[in-house]
Length: 356
Image 1 (cartoon, rainbow, N blue to C red):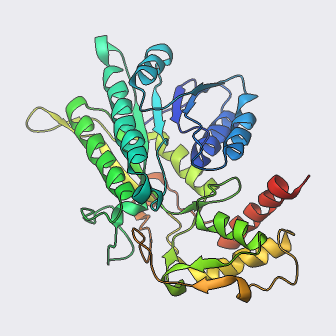
Image 2: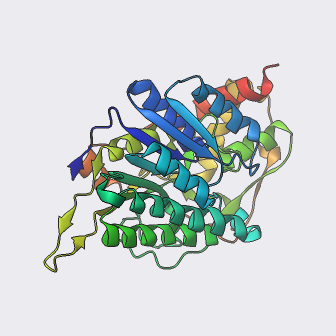
């Protein structure tokens, strides 16, 4: 592994108004005054844009932050960013997320997750033109969804992941393969991170914990899939950001193989809590924390507002990360207890939506 000192570097973060992107940018700018962060986001309305705007507002007060509104699927914008700012580290978090949305809106996934990522790879490739030093490390978001309905748990990055059960998962697996090809052909150090069910304050409203909160507050029935037998490896946002920051500083080593050609400087890691929680227990803790923070009244009748239903297309019964390689190479393992993370979410939700 090649150590990278991120001081005085220019870092490009795509999807910077997104959940992980904004938290990553905030952390980097807080920790290191010499770093310049270039952020791009198309600010689409896949979910409540006010959340994206509020994340962005927090970043925009920092003079080392430059925001560009645009899509990574727009090749001209990406070429301009690379030509103007010469980022040394690229963190690609822009993507059309969500499993269920990919069933009804496949175009969005092809545009952002495939064409957009291809443009980023091309930007990295041409950063070496004319003998330039170029991008030192490309880090990109993959997803636990690539494991599909893998029967073996915990999920290991050594497992075969050739059977995606959603288009979203297929695009994320494709990203890993494209990154491998570019690493091999152009010697670009790249690391893919398979994130496991990221949650926390100012998170994505399409995630179950957020949607459940909205519905419970409105007095609607929440549906718990697979009759409550789903298990998820819930990973708190600060743990994800810590993992990304560490990975940024250690790139796969460039080596030449016996054939005289580059051995691809390429790696993939899971970032998950490696402690899957039963969905029913998760919802109970969520309800307790929503009552504690005053989002729901003390006498809320939870039983009257939940319904256990069958599995839905594209979903998987369990996600469970084997994080030993991350621990081995970067000395880090996510460990925020679920209740702590949900408490912070509930408090944020109260402040964001319920304080006049």
